[in-house]
Length: 343
View 1: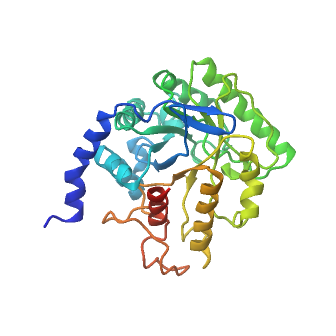
View 2: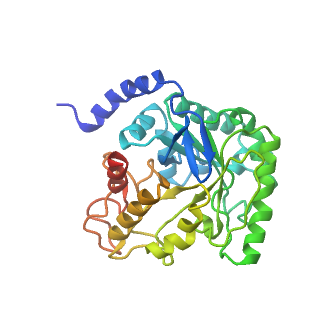
């Protein structure tokens, strides 16, 4: 009998043909009030991030997981996204790689990014394009001239497809939610909104909050002339983001009035986040997002924290902090997959 990998390979083309037949069925996304709508119907996104186009090829040297994600992107990966139960693909893309004045600019990278977006749209997925900064090149962690030049490179190809959402700047490096921090945030984000609208963008725009997109507590209002502005939260389960009260304070109360989507989440055993109660907290957060009808995008289906080399999804089973997880790589891949398949 064929192995699991062979079965996936054989069925990938069939799945994508079926998706392509639907054309852009997963199409126009709009905001009304504090809700997202797709083709006029209320929509709670279920998506995955892919990092296979997060940087030009030369930037993946010495980063085997990212190199593998880059090499693995294509129709088979999009078939895996479909099998996972997602209806949206979020691409993180390098602002430095897109900026003609950057030292890592690659003229072929822009074409790769746009080809990836086009392939996902033709396969029937909605898409988020998320502009990613890099500490080595963008020390402030805030929008810059590089950000603006990068958007100008790709916005003409994206502006009229309302099935594409634009996350204007991924995880602003602002550490608190004090009044002065929100002033810095607003002064950084409003010009990006203005730039994209002046460039003809009709897309829903997504803006991340302070604390690296963790919080909208006390956030001031931004202005979008089209009224199509949403907010991107990344509710990773850090020390100050573990309980329902934390989630309500950081983004849940805000979401009662404004449209919010969780555009990056995973529960990982590493990186200082591990604790015995992590699996229960991850499940509680998913239940909270479902209760509040907040869309979820998992990070990242083409990385080891979501999928193991054999294609199985990671789990938090038998979690032992400080050791490699016996059930996988210490990620919530299987938990999120089940959430998508049952909601």
